[in-house]
Image (cartoon, rainbow, N blue to C red; front, side, top):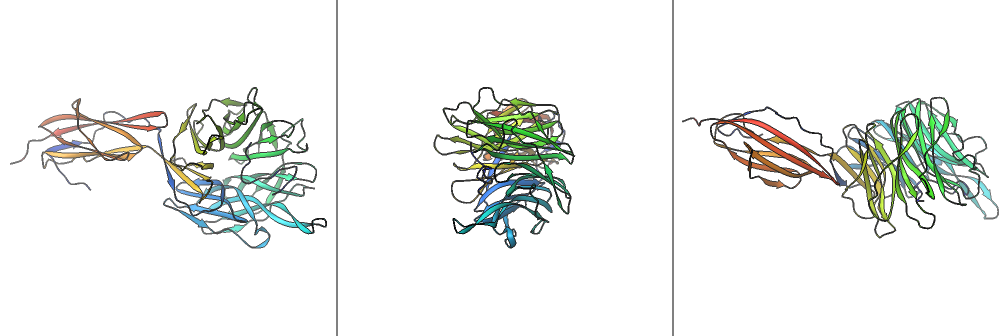
Length: 492
């Protein structure tokens, strides 16, 4: 099992166009366009040179957080480029990392994580022993500031927050892990806009106690669709053999365990990311190992329907290990999950999978080899932004936009005998032109984004049909334009 960059073991708690033509164009769509669900991914340069852990987007603005050196780090996307954002570097939180972030607007984000606090003195080692403590910060559109420090459960010696989900500027839920010296567990915090309140969470591993030596929680994730519905998922691992996934639900007053499904015969399973769009629609992703004798992780997806969890069929990108770390859904039928593939078989590759209806499919991306995509955030406009960590160099950021096309260039007045029609868009794989059901020749102006065809018409009524195809992964989608155009007798 691969641990997330932010986390710790519970048992050992370390850290214009011209008017032309003898043509009068009537802008009449005779057939509606079919839905186009393909997407185009592109790599964005980033200035972030640390470890990125989470990303949250609202409209065209995104915020990503993590750690840089020994301190917290953040960067923001304004729709054109990524810029570094300074995070607080004074006081007790000068050393730490941010593990989760949630934004409700471009001027309101809450990030959580942990910082190192030197409290205990170890006479044997002759130095102070740093301990992890929970940390929270706030973005107001211009800068980051420290929020009041969240509290740990009674008797807990140390702990940190792993994930946060906000439903308004004054309502956030956060979850994390703690250690009390001999055992550990989970805890939750509620932000009301001015202070944090502690909430207890049940042991994720009954009846096996989480206090068993070598036990740790991995991949803790959280998503809230309202102030009275949140889901947290993760995995716990026992040195005595294998691991299991778990899910917990917040109903507005308390946390309770849910029965997350295990893969039959699997040695271990873990859920690493979750996204909920309503109390009856959550998707969780992670991985499982079919056998205890070979470290070969396979992708895992589970779905919550309001009553129970069910395992979904989801493909793997390669014969090596495949793992999913984050997921973001914009509806009960549309989700994007990210992670890594090709582990154990050379250079790891970024992994993106898309859920369209009830089917998951692997989607191609353009990221360099070796990138691990850690988190993803999608907006209702179907733009998704993923962030990750390559073996070297700055943090990787990728963004997908829905494939699209529009038809332009049909003139609106009779001024010459010829005109040029253009199709422009994104993610186009081919364009086919026909006039009165006869194919006419077109050309590629810029592959994937712009195509053109020159047309001359005789007087009369004609039908122009343009069929555009988009290909993403193994799926091909078509969009058809049909226009009625009129040829006019040239004026003398």
